[in-house]
Amino acid sequence: MTRSGILLAIGETMAMVTPATAERLADAVDFRVDAGGAESNVASHAASFGVEARWFSSLGDDPLGHRVARQLAERGVDVSSVEFDAQHPTGVYFKDPGHGVRYYRAGSAASRLSAADVGAVDLRGVAVLHVSGITAAISASAAEFLDAVIARARAAGVLVSFDVNHRAPLWSAADAAPALLALARSADIVFVGRDEAEVLWATADAASIRALLPDVAELVVKDGDVGATAFTGTDATFAPALVVEVVEAVGAGDAFAGGYLSALLEGLPVPERLARGHRRAALTLQTTSDSVDERTTA
Image 1: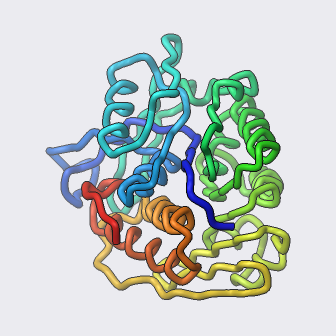
Image 2 (image 1 turned 60 degrees about the vertical axis):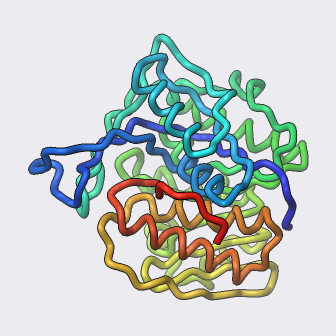
Image 3 (image 1 turned 90 degrees about the vertical axis):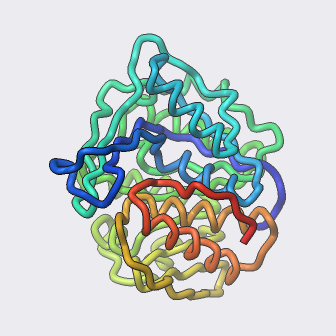
């Protein structure tokens, strides 16, 4: 399962506006504008470990789109293949620390992705393609794009990593459940939260999720501040989460996946993949940002 090579992450990234400190959105005075998107977050965290990471999507050909691309490049992510759309804007979302997020993404450039854009995806040197269920939810054409890029990656012998990432504001659990299950079953590596799996598939624990996804080569079930269990074949490895003071939980799952996948690409064993994922998530939990402004080899 392990190999060296490029991590390619594909999915929408928006301009993220967040209070500079852990204040409510309605009360804060100072704000940060940063790149925020599940898949590019994973690429950014992986790049912090020296992994060659690339991100592909579409951004508006507008100041926010170019700012997002620049910020990701500054984190060490290759954004050279990103498309800029002059007709559709970059999406925006606002963090309300401790109280979720507010999305303004309808009609965004990324939502206009379609199967016709798959040819622009460069798979040369790619070892792992990382995608998430968010892409399937933002538009019908983006869902078709996701199916097509997964099929192309599998045909090319590229490992597919899939984070379920159910976003309730984008679609109902009833609509999402079968689509996300099919996507998970098409992947080699799957990340899923125990709580979101229970909402989607009525699975109460990690073992029940494994029973639902028995053929996924590497299944990682995250259980918040309890820990995470990785299933590889018939083996199950549990690692407890680190105890930290949580400033903002949004983005921690992406940090975990970025740490885990970077360790996988380095050929580290499952316990070390889990440990690195937890360490990276712990750093992100202590900030209002989706990223951590530091490089590390730990």
